[in-house]
Length: 254
Image 1 (cartoon, rainbow, N blue to C red):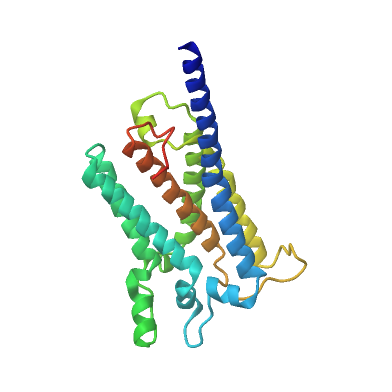
Image 2 (cartoon, rainbow, N blue to C red; image 1 turned 180 degrees about the vertical axis):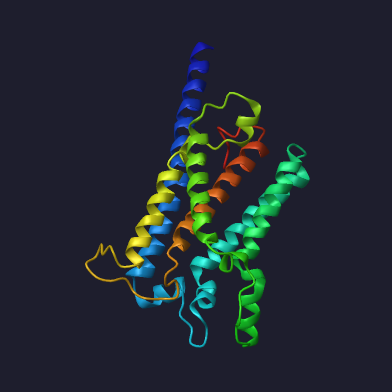
């Protein structure tokens, strides 16, 4: 009997270590690797990869053409995934519904801003000339600058939240796992790295990066990283609760 219990505890411990390693790889290594690969592919990769990530299309302005590339399209898909997860939780799990409704409205607004309320798809498919933007962040002075500071603050707050012990039910329900603890430093590093590379002050391979439709908007890589982290965080919470376990130790097995 004692031997059986010891074997059971050993198996749980081993399983916990594997799960912990998996979470660190999924939440830290995978997003960073993907964003850095996309950044290398756009700046220094082969031309075909450069055009897949952010194409330059004759007759279309850069801000419209890049919306049709893989970087922007993946951002849109991630936001759709976030909205789907929040709405699924809203309808099937009654706890915190007002908060979930606010989050759903916020994510929906961000998605509409990202796709310019569908205007760039309409102008591309119809062939009509694009004469304006519909989204707010291209018209309000200093909006993108202020938004960058908000993103910095939120990413560091996210890192801090992941380091706090989960001592109350509210914290256990919403605070991220400790594998998200480097989100703030990683977001800041990605933002500054691609700002310096694309704008020409840093040449990691001894040459200028390829020019393309991202132009003077290197924040696209930091945005992609942020959307990846938010999506993984929502998956982490939903998978943890769906198995009746605390979010600190979710089960990802389907």
